[in-house]
Amino acid sequence: MNSRSGIVIFFLFLFLAVLVLLQMLSMVQSDRLYERLNQVDANLRNLSYAAPAESEASGGATAEGLAASATAYPGDEGDWLVWRLGAEPATLNPIVTLRDMSTSWIAEGNIFEGLLEYDLDTVTLRPVLAESFGVSDDGMELEFVLREGACFSDGVPVTTDDVVFTFETIRNPLIDAASLANYFADFKEVVKTSERGFKVLMKQPYFKALEMFGGMPILPQHVYAYDDPAAFNRHHSDPVGSGPYIFEKWNKGQQIVLRRNERYYGKKPNLLKIVYPFIINDTAALQSLQAGQVDFMRPLPEQYAELSKDAEFSGKFKCLSYWNPGAGYFYIGWNQASDFFKDRRVRLAMTHMIDRPTIVKHLLRGDARVPTGPFYIFSPQNDGDIEPWPFDLARARALLDETGWVDHDEDGVRDKDGVPFRFKYMIVSGTSFHEQIVKLVKDAAAKVGVDIIPDPYEWSVFIDRVQNRQFEAVNLAWGGAVESDPYQIWHSSQIGNHGSNYVGFNMPGADALIEAARGTLDGDKRNAMYRQFHRMLHEEQPYTFVYTRPSQRFLHPRFKNVIVHKLGLDGREWYVPRELQRYQ
Image (cartoon, rainbow, N blue to C red; front, top):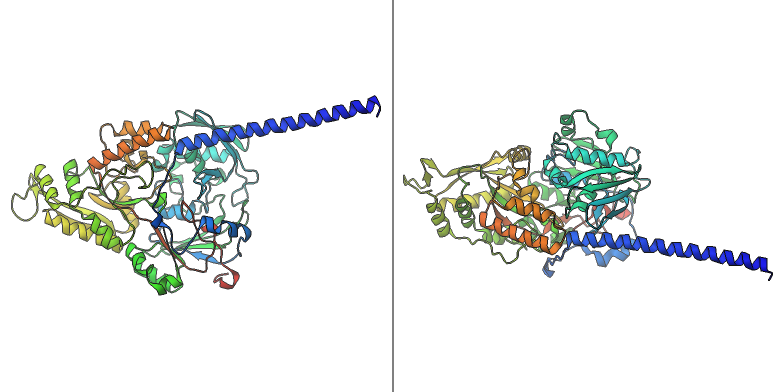
């Protein structure tokens, strides 16, 4: 070998060595980025759920049991899912306050997508519209790059401008988005760095910053742009998003239909359509399921308790029951703007007079619990040492006596300053479970000298009255979250203007505690604050927390790959074998 060729080989070796070194440095930097991201994500959530073993689902496979087979066999394409809704949604706009649980079930994840979503098993955030994301060590800056090739259902690419438009729309005070905008109070601005890249700057740290910004449903600016905010607020139908399904039609009073987005940039779902019929009556809904007109429904507690144990029924339908953070809770809200419920002792008397253990045992007849506060009962936010206030009619009478509500004229109804203790209790009409609850509460109230007048309304009127605080007492429920932020429901700034503090809770020190917890990234310290807030609510009783229960569903057995994840079900995974398909 001559010296010239030796020099060439030496420089070639040196060049290759430099390439290897650069690749190693790149890998180290990438690992450090993800280490920082994962550490911040862990600090933000610090989750430790411990749902009981008996809450395992029946009739559905676990994620671990089906993960391998799902990967190996993605399933056949075709067929529809007919999903019964108990009420017609007021809107399919995912931002405005009129959105409700039905809006979420239809639109979120199907029509609209966020930058990130929770992995249903690991309970960590993963990219959707984002290609990559990061968080600064101090939590004051988020960084995203959009996925190349992501587009809306009309073929227009998703860009940073759409993200900025969505963010600014949510924060626009003229947009009716109070129930969502409060989560963005600590965000400062979005800085565009490229067509697909941007940074999100914070005013101060917020423990849900990554989750809330990452989960924000991205709207196409070219479709939703507005000069008049009122026009945007009225944009309830014809939604356009980037998700795996497209809005097809809304037959008012009957159904909403979605069809598969054939332009979808990701893996397309196997099911070609999702049909959402509105069946208000629960008995009629069950009959529709048994007649083959409905595939999927949320049953009444007593329906699930009876039929899941019926061998013939459970042989024909999947009976799914599972605890997850979305379980939420059912409550009776006492409007503190009413003269009846200004005094904490009166609200406590209302709780004492309601036999919640009987409701759980005889009406729910399942694995329900009586909660003591607003947090998921198996989360570290919840103070498990707090015992529910007991059913105690004698204590209820004594508390009412203390507050001056006494039956002065001996007509069987307490009165004060000439006003009888007689109030309206608002419920959703045509809902048998609500009717059972109000009857039970009315009978109990009569025993302590309080007269309750049931006040039923059709759902759209009911929710409008709730948002405008036109009630004295009300049946309602809140869904849960992986980790809750009480600001939306309990901060005094959310009273009025379509905010979610419907009952007017406003206790000295509560706002400061809620705000301090929001800015605390250390999970242990934050959860200690939330347990303190939990004790505060327990003492004040702005709500009577009636029950929390597992999510329960009936599903036709032709649907396969039905996995019960830690965070629930994902219909986008389901398929129907060709020989079992019903619809074309």
